[in-house]
Length: 387
Image (cartoon, rainbow, N blue to C red; front, top):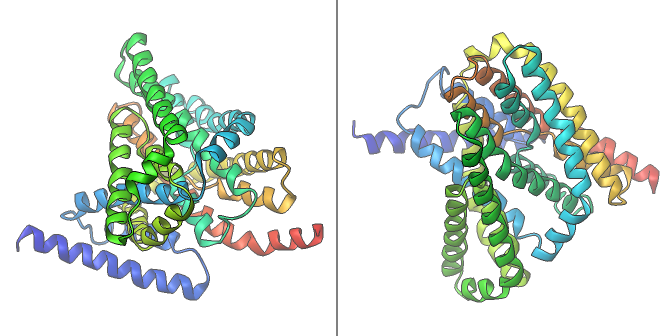
């Protein structure tokens, strides 16, 4: 059979299956994300029926899903709000770094994997999944809540930290000189600074360029600009998600509202593809031997993220219910964590690191959305009591 026909058949089956799972999730009143992840496990590496032919095609769709999730999240806020939030939450960002990088680093050192593995595992346990958190905030209607800017500022702080961390990790894995690492970090910081300054100073010119009375033209311009900036950011050792987010905040007002309405179906489609592809990359057979350790590490990380979110929200003067929501929203791990583990495994740091990271991320990627849904009634009760 022709390869293109196989891709269509496999990708069509994946989308149709995701639609059925989404309908089941709606009927059960839960987030569809855990079901998407399980589907990925079933049809990915080592699964019941691996879909090898369309995997590369689906991986591109997954990357696009993350970009669109962060683009639409950026459209909710403007550049002034972002800068103000980053300044006011800088201390919380440092608390986030210390509390959540420590468990991964300590785990690697206790297992005797060495300092390079410790640096890699610190990144695995530190970064919250921007994509999954964005989906949780949207699904549960938390976007307009008072604590959401605090959560977003922590996510941006983490992504900016990753802009420094990833070049340093890459340098350590490759055994390069200190000078090479410093140059990579400098380029990453310069890229983020330039994009942020353009968003702050020249946002109105970007809006004038993108604006169009025709919805088709507007959609093409917004998505094209987001992908262009995301690709440039990725090329310069910065997260593509950060680039897309900054494009979103550069647009505001009625233009941002129109863009959100147009992007919503496209975002939901490719976000689902991202979650199923995440499951594709995980071999179930390798997870079982490290499942206990991964569960323990995940439990510790849930506690540290809850403490982080509650601390940040409290500093912003938000009530207890909002503090709880902020902490829960930060629990999921996802795209960044797997990328970091993949870099370490590819460099031959330790054979068990990849399996541990995969099991750990899978637990938190699945449990994070479920926790948010299950704890929502309790949070509402806390808010009513406070009122």
